[in-house]
Length: 117
Length: 113
Image (cartoon, rainbow over all chains, first blue to last red; front, side, top):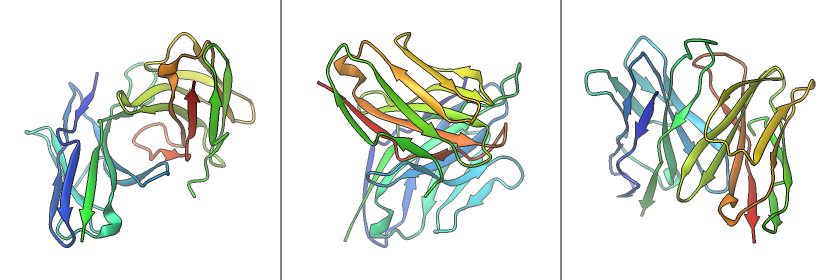
């Protein structure tokens, strides 16, 4: 079974500062990795994902994450945050089920990013 | 707008009651997932349906059940409600079987008094 650990429940930063949100996963098989973002009173939206290929993936709004297989990590980074980045960020992992091929997405507990002026 | 519609958005009920949450997936998506989000448990996977059939089960209580209908909409039934069932219930849909993006609805907030 897969699991995800997000050690930081809350990360406060100042606007224009860099930020890193940590995510570690556990799995005995190859995995797909995702970061989802949840803005206040909204559902989750996909921010970026790693399926295969380049280990560095980027989102359209300046976030990037790097898949590190040896460290089983998929940390999310942004060099300069905006007030509008204030949200909850969820790391997630999935792996194909051996019997049916259907995936189950397992989420971490989330990290609340608080950006202040 | 993700294209996934959930109703009702808010629901307040009493312990012991039964409620039904409804989800309409994005047009063309065959997979529907239900998640429960609470402060103490985080985001928990409940159950997944694909084209009307149950495909994966997570931490879903026996008091809860779900189904996906021929028109692909899904319902989550919660019965014998307890205070601890108060949470945000999300529905998500996808089209691809593996590695596909999940599109989430805005959730149904259930409050049990």
